Length: 322
Ligand SMILES: Nc1ncnc2[nH]cnc12
Ligand SMILES: [Zn+2]
Image 1 (cartoon, rainbow, N blue to C red):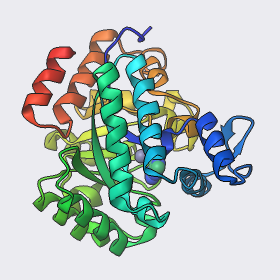
Image 2: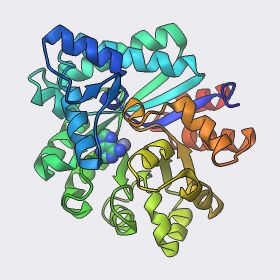
Image 3: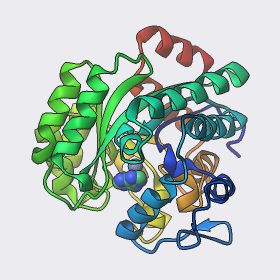
Image 4: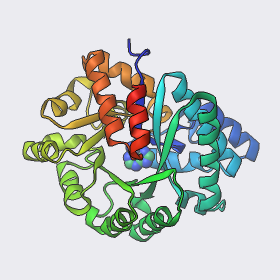
């Protein structure tokens, strides 16, 4: 039973959290045929590439500033209802541009959703702007420049997501330099679809405080020690890893092994309805599939707050709430 525990989430893609019922209503509203991506209340994909395609198609039914406010508010309300006190949402202003809404209106909608949810429940949230690898280095640099110049206090981090098999991390290093120079927190998807080398690449080329997933670092024990020595925090999403078949089952998932090797680990849901999960379920899995007790789970939540991309006053307040 983990429902009573306070929760923190560092790794959730906003459009990846879209409830199927809301996506269906949006598709109906705009007369969009979503039947190839959403059937019987579930998103339809069969491997990582088709998941990314499905994700991009689903994102297209969210079109206006108000749509993004509603999506954000809906997900944060869901988190608050399970005792979540802090959430970092991975957002893509580039996507706002691609659908003709514009990056500023996209972010304004998301921020409005954060404010509405915070007023209702007190949940705190910040935004991590992401570039998408499969749109190429120039688009990722554009996302970094947007984040760096936005002057928006809710945008506190920069990430690289998308097709991990496309290019090498070094191709995207310039984008991270821009984000670092702007004082943004750095995190990057690595060691999810690609092996340990992608985590080593990320450490060499980006020097991030955190890594999204990073779980395949377990294939190289020297690298695991390097992560532990550096104190790099892993945003681990076990349900996502099993759904995408990174590991065949929870028994072979390395969450516990990484933690016992001294790596800083945290728990998140990634794209919850796409992977038939939720932050609530990920916390329950930590107890039931991985055998962690309440104190160990609280320690992971504390690690997440310590690694959150927030100002020190907010961090102190979150630690006090935990
Ligand atoms: N799990 C994931 N990995 C990489 N890119 C993503 N975009 C949305 N979810 C993702
Ligand atoms: Zn992710």
